[in-house]
Length: 201
Image 1 (cartoon, one colour):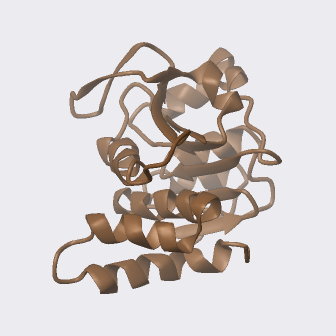
Image 2 (cartoon, rainbow, N blue to C red):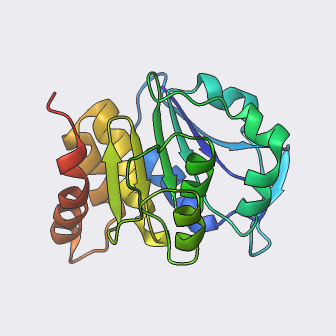
Image 3 (tube, one colour):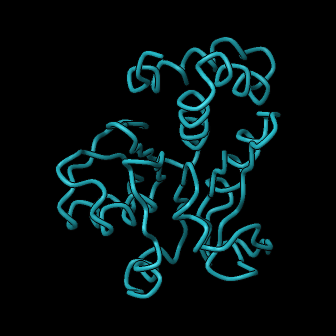
């Protein structure tokens, strides 16, 4: 199971790194989470430099792809070569996006008539792309999920885990990272957002 977190220049650390940490709570052979970048080194919106663990070409063969956001997403969607390399397929992949990452999915034609979640800044651009924007933190239809707001990244991570490993595994991963003293309430609230979109196993 390879989960590629698409992490572009100017990326938002909360989107890529929080999801990365939660997804890596799963410890089983073959479970791999990578920061998947267009270049060997990318720099975040606040100057954090990270080295790619996989490159964009690997996203097309990943089992799941999370598209993080950042301050250069409009440049990303305007780059025809880069967008052309993102050959994602919801028929065989779990695909999720957060905040301006939702704009990437919209421009790739992966949302169609399905409504989506995004952050308040990106909302007008997603609307302009012809996608209805919901006033909620998480929504999924089939194998495609979107989330809005930096702190919604645990919802995307938990959704991927629940779809791959089951709800108990998602709850355990969230419980580990949840604040002390409110772990049960945090997990229940988070799972309340994603459970309606998890098919019965």
